[in-house]
Length: 243
Image (cartoon, rainbow, N blue to C red; front, side, top):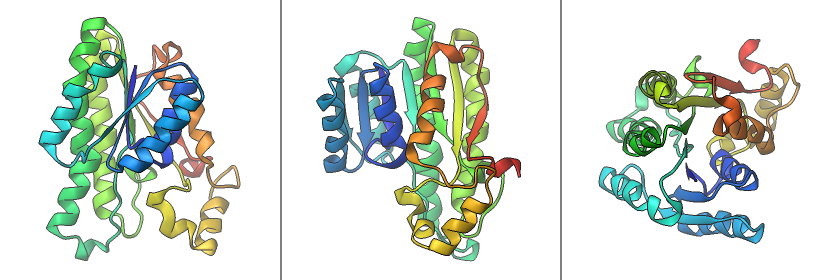
């Protein structure tokens, strides 16, 4: 069974659909109930199994309640995908307390506490997978991204810490670092045709990502094919980070 946060849209939704296609039962987690229901329907219309929990992961009490409820659908999760996140674009001088706190709570604290709550059951079974969503900003800075970049740098180190703690028990932790994909978080860039093309021209592949490009890496990291892969940040970015 796989639990996917941020499953109502973008990369989280795409990974949820890919895991369902590969045969996993899904617990879908996000704030927006209506869009979450759309993902659930798409999975069930393709003969998959899915349940949905709408929750604001910034609310620590609600997060812990979600973790307690999740096993009631299909059993304890074997796979956890932490894809929920926010990117509140601000100049570094204008990042306020609420901007910083919301970004860290959503992008870094939620993956930490969700994995902390669900990893013990994986350890007891001797097998599990944690897949975090990192970013190009896990290793380099972009304008208007101080808080977001700090949170994603934290995700890279959190992934390594989870791998160090749990891999010996069969629970591997890795992260996918997407390049430029058309999602709600990148909408300001996508809507700027000149800037979007500039991003594409900066990749070896000569194009920006399409959501389906993340599917193969996600399924690989969620499967036994990745048994000896842990603590890694895998860049799915058309070669942008290698340039």
